[in-house]
Image (cartoon, rainbow, N blue to C red):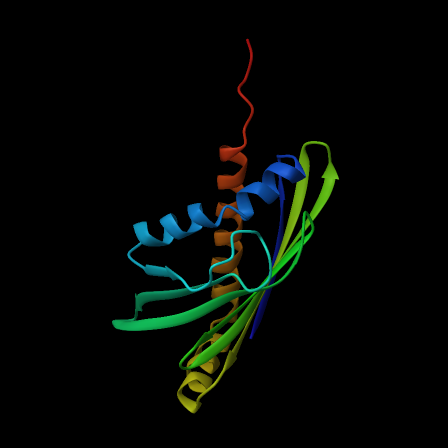
Amino acid sequence: MKFSTREDIEAPLAAVWQTLTDFDHWERAALRRGADVMRTDRHTTLQPGLGWNVRFAYRGKQRDVDLRLTAIDPQHMMAFGGEGRMIEGTLRLDVVELGPRRTRIAVVFDVLPRTIAARLFLQSLRLARGRMEKRFKARTSALAAMIEDRNALPRTL
């Protein structure tokens, strides 16, 4: 099952890229939402192979996901791969400069089942595809708004 959307952000490309690659910020955000996040690599630079083990509650059960940065083209694209017991997925973020203060991010999220139970779960999501696409778009819009707020220039009188 694949979801995709794009959002325009009122911020320079460098600021958007810096926010997207601030993995310490994203780890803290996950912790605030109740997830347990553990770094699984020892890399100190932004490169493929960065990894995290994320544990969180979903629908009353603990879920474990191993997340890896699989590809990166600085200032242009990042791709992640994730594996859980029942599903696996990919997330790709493409970043395009539209102007000096405007950047577009394109987000593509693809989920594949690994078990029969996961197939049934994804089939139920397909039946509610319209609602799921709206939620995905809303989350991406919230991400864009957060990046804009974080990188807003102070207004002068």
